[in-house]
Length: 305
Image 1 (cartoon, rainbow, N blue to C red):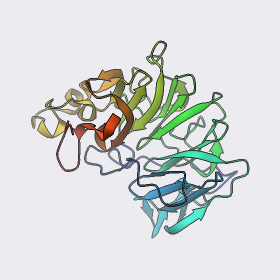
Image 2 (cartoon, rainbow, N blue to C red):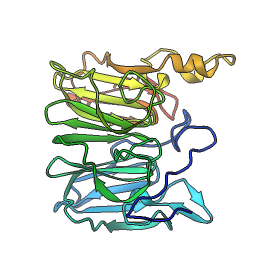
Image 3 (cartoon, rainbow, N blue to C red):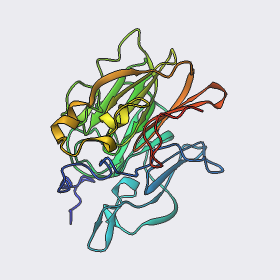
Image 4 (cartoon, one colour):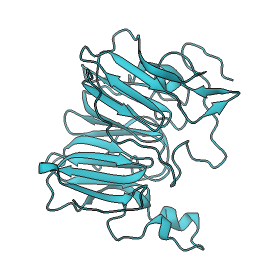
């Protein structure tokens, strides 16, 4: 059990397998944009919790997590001030002074909120740094990320990493980075927002999306960039983790990860929005056409429609 002190909690211990909850290749974490409830201007959901943004900027949360201890569940990512407790069945408003949100993103055990001034707030489990506060403490009430001193227009949350697209087109990434999903060229976790140097003029990002262990960026010219776990970044027909030889080790699998943003061939689709779920990616084009790649729960990859 963790003791609360100034709304920061001791870091959660990593699970035995060494990867954050919801980050395994077989994870069913769902970060696709859910249907917008009546009366909400924006919403986000993971496999276990949901966030709704009301027209006045208020935030309503519900759900729980897959992390259990002594009959209680981890709920710090709901932002209601508790670390462990009972699932929240009905949408419940947050009471955070100064927070008027316009967008939200939901990770496995953390939540991001974008306010009307372009600032990003976060709460939940801090293991591997997805909250962006410079440490791994658990934060049960949304806290503004003070080191992100730029106006942000788009946010995304993976299982344990976070992305922010700034109004000038720059991208900041932080949190768990074992598969290169932060786009910094390495595998280290990052505890505070760090600019992705590979995304620089004339390349300008306008939207981000994140799966369990990969990241997607939509650029102003309609192109798409990706980085992260190899299975998620594989193109249609490429070798997937499910096809790996039995004698292929972890080092061989890691060697195929994409550590810096790389362009995805989605031609002739003119992309208007990106989504990600688990190790799968989806690009929605003008007229509702869609291109999907990576690994999807139903077993399909790289389907065009």
